[in-house]
Image: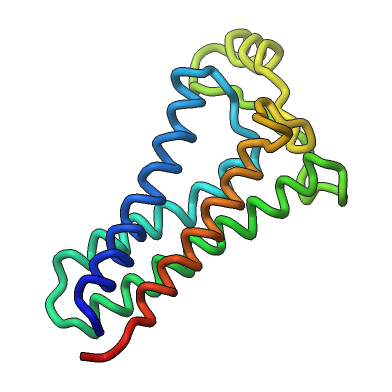
Length: 162
């Protein structure tokens, strides 16, 4: 395999989930968007991809590195598929897979404090996008970027033997 192509695949496998997770966390912590349950589902494969891609920089042996990058690409694609499912729910193409959720945050306290947190917590609906640009929600952007990134990684992984 051409090492430059592999290096590109490995870099995409590391940087894409890192960027998408940074965007998700940034929109949550800085933009004050509250993620729904399906938003969280999209993050888990990116966490896995990030770990797999990071390992591909430190493990010995090209076959092991290649396998880790391939697994990272698969995890990124899984997040993209979940993004498609979530975007479809937001665009009302099909019904959601989960009930609406509430992000209460925190734990402990008196029963009155816990009840107050529950009553004041925002209701987060999976079928209503909290933000969109040109009609594309965050779930839609995740689907496009994740599936496109997975295809790019596979393209660069395929490479010619030298």
